[in-house]
Amino acid sequence: MTQLWCNGEWLDSDDLPIAPMDRGAILGLGLFETILALDGVPVFADRHLARLRAGCQRLGWETPLPDLQKIAGELLVMNKLTSGRARIRLAITGGSGSINDLTAGTDRVVSIIACPLDDTPVSLTVSLSPWPRNERSPLAGLKSASYAENLVALDHARRQGFDETLFLNTAGHLCEAATANFFLVKNGALHTPSINSGCLPGITRAVVIALAARHGISSEERVTGLDDLHSADEIFLTSSTRGLAAVSRFGDRIFRPGPVTESLRGFWNEEIRRKIPG
Image (tube, rainbow, N blue to C red; front, side, top):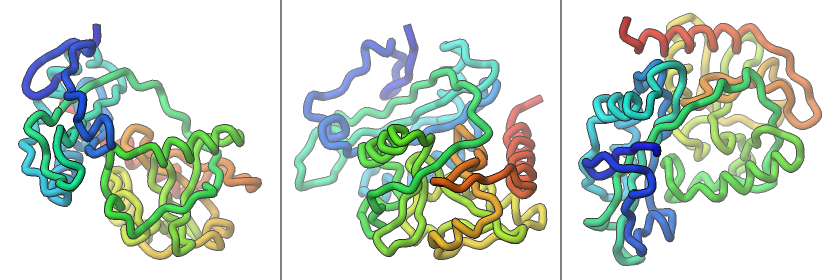
């Protein structure tokens, strides 16, 4: 039986309590974070909590957040996930309440669960989504539980034989992938869509930008279009559990492994290993 932490208690996964009218369950009103754990240690836990706290503030929620480092560490031990890679999911539901009022219900659920994480591929094939991302949505930039749009787009891509999909926004600019942020490399310089594109302010995205600056790789957050993508030398995606994954094919175009992507992947691996004691 899988153990999880919920509202201050340790529970079996079958005993997760959630109200029948919890707006997180029936309306998707909730927030979550997906966190990499390496050898029993959550990676960048402080950054994930900061993003979750900012999301709560945007929704007007005064929700006490757990000590993620401590509880997740105990959770990984209880589920025998102290060696290798694991995925931690910290989630907050909106609880019961009116559809006309975002106030978090007193029966809201705050939960943390962990599961094993297989090795992720070093490269991915990517399509262009037929549906645009609304950069002016009130949910833009939130790690929202309203995730069905991403799943539908991802399923469409996989039915076409691709691993992932890229969204344009309503202005026709590149935004993000269904489950990742997006970078391209041109003439040795790194480019990624700005937050104004509607993309999620990804944890690994921010780390990669910082690593590029630290190692003298030129980088810029800017408006990025399809022409930029088609003329790129390298493309890669970033997410908390994947790290950096090179794009080997976008649509019909094949991309070869590139030196900037490989260098940044090495720097990222070094950075997450620095977070592990001993």
